[in-house]
Image (cartoon, rainbow over all chains, first blue to last red; front, side):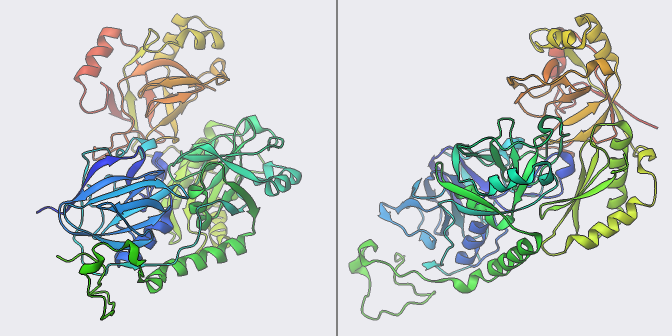
Length: 342
Length: 245
């Protein structure tokens, strides 16, 4: 039988995402890929597989799904209310999704983007070298009821695992570096920008996130005469009305609005995950500091596998509690007492 | 131009070589030529390169590699020649893309003609006989910014955006013409409609046009446009191509 996940119902912003595609900037296509790349690494660590495998990204809410065969899954990113055949399921954890069982993933409890990973990865066809949908470019499409997602070969076995996650789901401090147009803004404007508390506007998506504030607009010198130039993910562009827009993974490749700075890659997930209305502040850091933060982030992503531990469950949440042999108590990856018997 | 070319750091994503602070034909050519030269260097820290109107972007991992080394190498390469007089890239294509000007399909032709100070008939005559160059591909996949049109076409973008122009729309502002890749809101004026697809995700060559290619927009009737659109499976929208010397 083909290993696949069937979409029964689905929120409006569920897409297949991986690390995106590089090599097409000159042709007008940005990398795209998961809005919260760290979540891809966490899912990979939980399932003991490559972070390059594709997963489902769920914006705001998930959907309901059914697997054709027993399948390992992991849930990461923005925590969402989830049940397996109506029994609550832990987030930031790996689980067995038995064939035919109904997995329901509801709204985000905090943050914006949740991820559903499959053992073996989602194996939809490659498009220009990646599986990621890039909707703003017209590449791929959002999932809808009836979508069938083939899963790759799963070489892993571990289940019922969890890992500690960095809270990046409620806004907070965003570190930025200067970029090619920062000096178009005078030092007072830069300082005011760094001391302003913004709120994430409801207008935010995978292309960009608008930031609201109450004070005067942040305008550059010669705001209207700046020539269109390259955009990179994380750039904070100041739109015509003086409001900042953080450009996200599916942004355009060029633009004519001035950029006051660029969010460092490690903090992009926090921008993406900040829910509408939550407060954010931007802090300029120098290049050396930014580089050492990013180097540490690379190292900690590589070490995520070592942080994975067995999931200890509240007995109230265990399905068929009485059917388990509760006395021996030994928990191992291979004979986890908590997943349903075959 | 004493300040140019200049090198700017783009966050942690790479370095940018800017050749001017406004659009000019020599600066555009310089950006395209420098990009081609960087591509032949195979510098290990460089991930990919691209051009905007008058700049060359060198995408590099500035976390793994400090920018100073790359900046020095770039500076050295920039010093080897006068990029502003560099030739256009070889292997360029001339595209003749049938275009329906005006009518309900492209409702802002008259408005654009008025802004350019000419009659709608003259506007069609000029736009359908102009031969423009792809200055850069950007914003959306395969979307060409072409130019430059004569100076009277230096018309501003509209203050209020048009809610949506369809894919294949030919729009004009600031002496440039764009063919839109996807339906999109825009401040540029919609003067013509083509059946040309700038982005063909399922094709072996998803992006048709390259910077340096030349394009013209021969005028066709509504009937001819409708026939082309109905019969086109390639995405070329009836375009004729020829190799430029």
